[in-house]
Picture 1 (cartoon, rainbow, N blue to C red):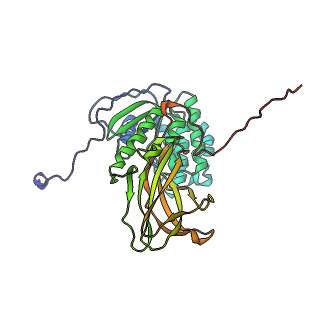
Picture 2 (picture 1 turned 30 degrees about the horizontal axis):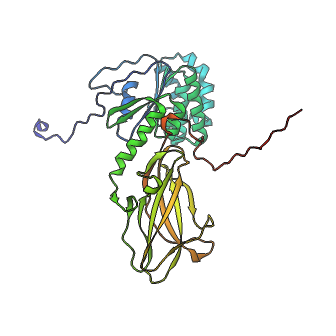
Length: 394
């Protein structure tokens, strides 16, 4: 009775708004979007683990869903017992599960742990068994929600290969991932959700391009972009007293750079302004570093490693240095940093100052859905030469 007079602290939240779409038999569809866009909720509705509060949903076919780590598995039961329980839930007979058990155990590759309680498993072992069960039972519809991110790279490759096999066999696949290369590799179409609304449903290349564009728009508002004589200022810092420092970084309009977003194969131009409060002239080396979305350092390049002359910074003045970066990385979101070092340090880099990680630098798929100039995480500066004449084999 007392609860009738208490003020409710809960707030109703609608995760999806007017999402209307149709997925045909045998299609492989990626569901992409920022965190909180409604991807997992959509999969839960399709899988039947969450009821819809409004609208109509129709699913035709036997569904195997990998939604959460260990979902549907009983922690006190062994891996073997969970295999049979999940098979029965999916509507298979005991003899059918028994006939496929060796295949499941071989795919999971967890050895003697198959007869240990699931609660003793590591996260990697658990996702191995969950995935092995779901794909070995030949579902008509396979739903995967970021499960592959848990396993090691070899297991991820095995899972991706198995998904491709199911796809070729006509299985309908719904796949949520933040890895755009994996989405492009496995999916024919993508659903792009923005704040719970359907922004795009169509070809994969076009959909992933919209995802990257949305990432850039969402995050650019966090940066204080200011007008600069050379271009748009994307980073600034007041000069450091009695020292040499980086005071600003701007987009180089002369190089055609108007935003931190461009298609793969083009170049990004930056103007780095270096100031000195010291009375004497300094010789400075400049460094450029770039990281991917997984916080992996991809490359560090300096004027010193390139055997270039240092930048001469007069005392009590500033100097502008231009940097051109070819965007020969696979489409994705990156961050970069600029540093300066002392040229008097010989071969060893003597750091003076560096910026924070700046971004996001968004590299989009090629325009007009053309093929990229390379395949893989990055392109190498490879040059091909041809002979001026040919000689007959006879």
